[in-house]
Length: 345
Ligand code: ADP
Ligand code: MG
Image 1 (tube, rainbow, N blue to C red):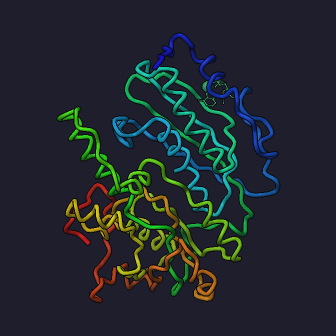
Image 2: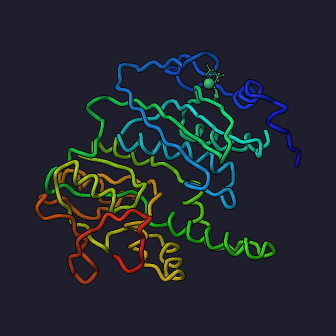
């Protein structure tokens, strides 16, 4: 493969090269790349703003993260934050720190992923920054979304007795990561052994190419539901439940049997001698939506594919509990995925 040195291009030519084909999709993107700032029209709505930074060696390893996926994921995780506020993402800016270890072609691959995600979710790339980095690769994305004020959903806002729902399934991304990490260490010991990921495509994809749940936001809108509270699942179900409960001043009860887990997650957890429920509670990076609704909205969502009711909110004094398969009540712990351990439920 050809390799063009970054030094051959220089900053301005690189920016031009990466962004020259960008066509703005939204009328609200009044001015994009090329001046000192982008100009955005708010169409009488409220503006929501979020940012996330990905660091090489901390949030990803290039040994198993293809550059295109990395670009895609960097955008996807920001859009997920906006959907979690019930907002529609409109614009992003992208800032990158690259060392000359990277070629122009490598940075292009990152941008392919960034622009693919922008196309899939109808978002305009309207600016950014490009710097050289001495250490690893850094990608920082800032996303702008719009929402009607009365439709914005916060972490606070749930009432006692609301139903707690989650989209999709949980724990897959974490199990995908375990698999990729294992294959990485096998590869480092013996580069002749190629990764064996057959039959594990779903969980690997969940880790490498998460999809923010625009479809769930659309579905809720169609059903006329504004969740009473909402958050996206980036650090594991348990941790997000703690955030919702704390912000709303409530407790909750979650039923183990109701937690949606894909068969591939189950199978892989088994192979790693981990509990799939632990992966769902403490794994993270699922980028699903966790939200609460009024009981009166139950009929509207009970037959919807992709939404599971997993429990309900309680008085704050009752705390947060998981009801196990055998009906035992265990206090939930918000460990985050660093402290992940197979012994904990
Ligand atoms: P300034 O010195 O004013 O910050 P830059 O030369 O950094 O200007 O950027 C010029 C234009 O290119 C601006 O519109 C900026 O938002 C955009 N830009 C810079 N880097 C990137 C990038 N990595 N991706 C997208 N747009 C970028
Ligand atoms: Mg700049």
